[in-house]
Length: 295
Image 1 (cartoon, rainbow, N blue to C red):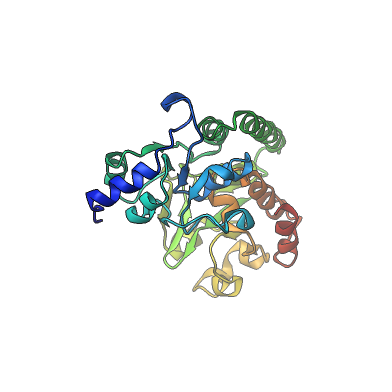
Image 2: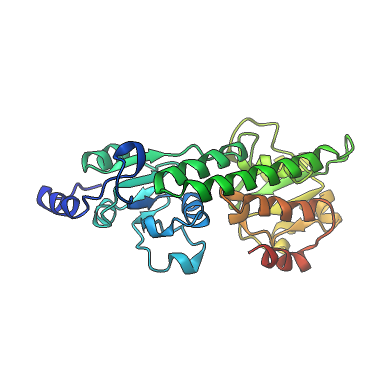
């Protein structure tokens, strides 16, 4: 990644001489660049979109609120020239493709903050922190409290399921190569919250590739595809016609992956969709109506 010419950096940062709110300066409104879709969704959910001056190409919800916000690169991979041109006072991220980018951002005089926001338990704290950074503490506090209340209710409901009644679930994140989610993932949290048992939960990893034979050996009760593969393509894999999930017609491909892969305000809606499938109340044919209802 090329560094900007010194004269250009100086000019851009001089024009952006807007202090960051709170502990960093105590005055003025922040100018925020978000390098993660879930952070962008949090910013919009707490009414802080006016502070957002840059986003990634993956930040696409809510679409109407973001249409005029410049794109400064990909998820966790900013184009430094575009980022500096947005004149931010702070950059928020959950992860970076290249960790050295954080140091580059700092050398340009821009504050950088990495948010811990990978699991369900992280989300309320992340919402409150974004509220502090953007000056929307009250709305963020309420949003976090609402999230915690709903999460508690869903956990209570899942906890009442009879022992041994949880169907086994294979969550397919990507189809070629086949990728799934282990016990260190948000998806594992959500499958459990929705009343299922993740067959990859035995592996202490976040996301990893598996072979078709690995899935066959575990013979899940249902398959939930969070990528873009069609059910017919999944069922046509060698040996998969004998899976319990395929024989029972429980291969679901209508789940919006963004609902369950982004650790943000909508993730409990994703858990609700998964619960509809896991409980047997919904099929592929009516799944789209479930998603429309929560958007």
